[in-house]
Image 1 (cartoon, rainbow, N blue to C red):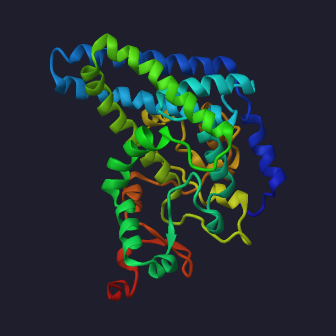
Image 2: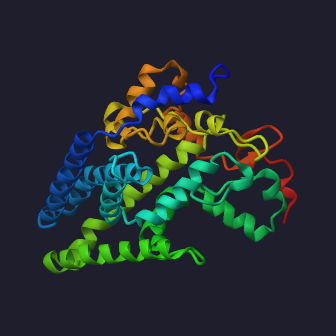
Length: 334
C-alpha cells in the first residue's frame, strides 16, 4: 500500500469514479441480456442439428451469464443505479438469471467486504481458508474434508454447481425473515421463469441447454472469486492489525486479463480497486486504474493464477499462503 496516502486522500482519488450513470448501466443491461437471449435461443435451435453445436454455443452463452452476474453484483453494492429501488428490482431480476437471491447474497457479500483478509472474521462470503496450525490441530476426517474442498477439480468443477443449484435454494438456519424471503422470492422467480420454458420447449431440452451453461458460468464465477483473494503475496492478518485499505490493495488481486475478458467479466479483475471503493460502477474501474498510479500494483498473471490453485493454507509465521506439501510433519499425523 502507498504509505504516503491516508484514508482521506484515497477517498478523494476514488470519489470521481463512484458515480453511476443510468444510460451506461441501462446500455450494459441491453448489451448483456439481448445477446444472452439470442444465444440461448440458438442453443435450443441447435438441439435439432447437433448437440456438439449446442455445447459450442454454451461457451459464449455462459460468458454472458457471467457478465449478467457482475451487473447483479454492482446492484448489490448500490453502484449500478443511483436509485436504491432500481438496484433492488434489477438485482432481483438478474438474481433469477444467476440462481442467486439478491438480498441474501448482498448481506453475505457486504460482510465479505468488511472482513476480507481478517483471520478472526472468516466464514461469511469467502473461500474457506485454514491456517497451518488449524489444519495440524484438526482431526483426520476434517483435514480430509478440507483437502477435498480445496482440490481444484472439486473447487471449480463440482462445488460451483452445487452452490448455485442446490445450496442457494435454502436459507441458512437462524437468518432473519428478510433473508428467508429473499431466498423464497428467488426460488419462486426461478419456477416462474423455467416452468413455462420447460412446457414450451420440453424439460429435456431445457436441461440439455441449461446444464452446460450452469456448469461453465458457475465454474468461471468461482474461479474469478477464488483468484481475487487467493494468490501469492495476499494480505491476511489478525483483527488487531487488520486495515481496510491494506485488505483492499494487498488482499485483492489485479488479475490481468485480455480486453474481451475484461468486458465479459465487467472489469471485476480490477478487484483491488473494487475493494477500496465498492461504489465504483464496473465501467469506471479500468479508467480509475489507468488514471491513478497509486493503483498500479503487481498484476496476477494467468500463469500465477494456476499456481494459486495449489495454495491452500495460511502460514501465520511466514505470512504467506502455502500448499499442503509444504507443511512439515504432516505425514506423521494419522
